[in-house]
Every structure is written in C-alpha cells, then in structure tokens.
Image (tube, one colour):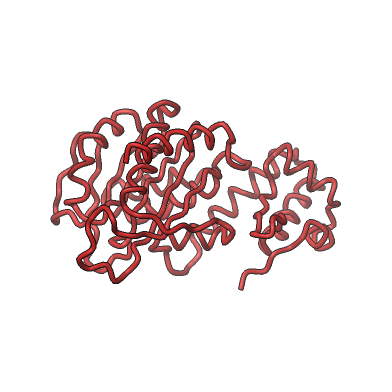
Length: 282
C-alpha cells in the first residue's frame, strides 16, 4: 500500500518549512504532489529524500533551481540503472504512478473519438514531440495507417505497436514495433503524445471475456492525463518496449525531466471540445 505524506509531515521529515515547500512548488514545480480521490494533496515517501537533498545542496551554496535540477537528474539516473522489473504495461504503470486517476469503462468507438481528439490537438499545437500508439492487432492499425503517417511528419519520433509480422519494415518516419505473443501490451490501447505544447496520454486495458462482441462495442477500462510528468512516465514505458536500434536512444532521450506543474486547463478544454465533437458524430 502506498504511503503518502501531508505537507506538514514532509516538513517535519526534511526540516523545510511548509511555506518554503509551497514556494518551491509554485516557482519550480518541485516537489510534485499527488491529488487523492478525497481532493487532498499528498507527497510520496520518496519526496522526503529528494527535498532533503535539495536542502543540503542549498546549504552548500548552490542556487535553488540548480539544486532541484541536479537532484531530479540524479533520481532519474538511479531509476534507470537500478535493478528491478521493467514496467510492461502502460496502463498499470500510469495508475501506479497516480492511483487517483479516474478509470472509465468505454467502448472502442468512444476510444477512437478520444484518440482522434489527441491526434488533432497534436497537429494543431505541437510541431515536435514523441508519439506512441498501441493498436493491439495489425488489422486494427490498418484503418489508421494513413492518419499516423501524416502525424509522423510532424513528430520527432512516431512508434506504433501491434502484432505485426516479424521483420515488419518501418514506413518513412513511422516505426512499426512487433509485439510478442505474450506481451501485455497486446491487451492495451494507448495514444501517448509526449510534447511540450500538448502532453496527453490515453491508456486503456481490454476487459476479458468479449469473444463475439462486435468490434466497435468492445469494452476497455480507460484513463487519461495531461500532467507532463505522468505523460513522460507513459512514454518511457512505451520506449522501453521499442526493441530495435532506436530503442536505447529513445529511452535516453526521455530521461530528461518533463515540464513541471499540473495539466494545462486550456489544453484540457481544447481536448474536451474535440472529443465531444467526435463522439457526437458517432
């Protein structure tokens, strides 16, 4: 069970006053709290060590922004080199990172509308960034192929995952990743847009026991987020599953700290409006 700390508890463990912690968060996006279902903001156990390290560097004469950047960089490096199982499910990993994310049961028809809304928002806002698409089966990707080839022209990198035949060839800037027959990603749907201007991640897990259900009525448990650090978490899981020559470079690229802060309300409103329009079309 995850243990969370109130700002008072974090303060007592680190010696940094609550008012100072609030200033750090407001100005530098550090530390990053989790909002629980109750609405309360809480901090992870690990945040105490990070805050203490920043305070130590500050006492040694380092500027606050540099101390935060150095602490984050070291924490991310340790996360990369530490032994332990690599996350294999985008959906499960995202919910572990933020258990307060709401989960909805949605049909494939609805997921298509939400996915198109994300893709459109990327085209409008982001001229760089990394795109990841989990389609489960190659036959499911076929109708979206032309659309994703266009997206690939704008993105820094574009990766699509499905049960493609072994040795499937990339298509221009579109990288096709073949999933093994036992990969948990075969049960998942995802569109992850890791871009500064439009960070959005939609992930879903197909509910079992749907043999014979019409394609567009298949049901998934879905969640989404526009919090940059959570989007980066989702993209890192995707990148780690990119078992080709591009994989290690992509993983290294995504070790950089994402933008700090919460979801952009303007982006959230734009996504909502596009999603409603797509769903209204049926």
